[in-house]
Image 1 (cartoon, helix red, strand yellow):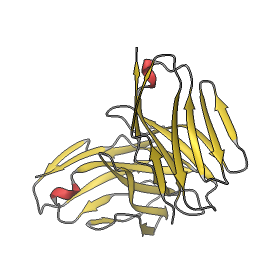
Image 2 (image 1 turned 180 degrees about the vertical axis):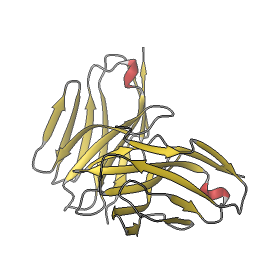
Image 3 (image 1 turned 30 degrees about the vertical axis):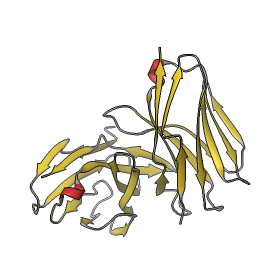
Image 4 (image 1 turned 90 degrees about the vertical axis):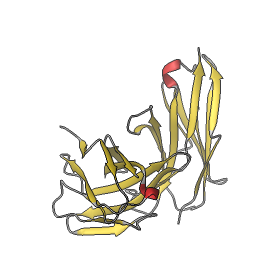
Length: 113
Length: 110
């Protein structure tokens, strides 16, 4: 089965700086990697995802990169803002259907104004 | 569309009590899941269903039962609550890999 490790567990950055969160996975057959953002007391929400046939995907200030050889993928947030403060989770598929996932343990990001 | 709904939002139980956490979705998704979220542990899969009448165990199924009689509903039953089941529970439905989470139920077992 899949094993997902996420680092760091906490991250503090100054407003305007960049933040990078990294996840590693174990199953070379995994083919879809989402990132979720969870604000305090709220539900996780998908912010960006990447499939194994591409190496990078961008959506405004957020990007995800995938290195299939090394089996890791990273979330990059540029020009961070206080509203980016949240817990971020990576995930990888538990099985080939892509409907059940193993989640990382989360990164608590604090953006300091 | 209401999306994924869960009731109750908060619940306090005594050790040994049983209860059912309700989950419903109106998006006609075949796949539904239950996760628990504990500090520092991320989201862990309890049970999942690939369609009405079909359920299977996830990573941490002990102490929980599920059933799926309709596409819309996926209740989670705690058979005999234990303090170790104190957690936040999220139900999710999924379509084309994207998970849609409910608002969660915060459960405390005393």
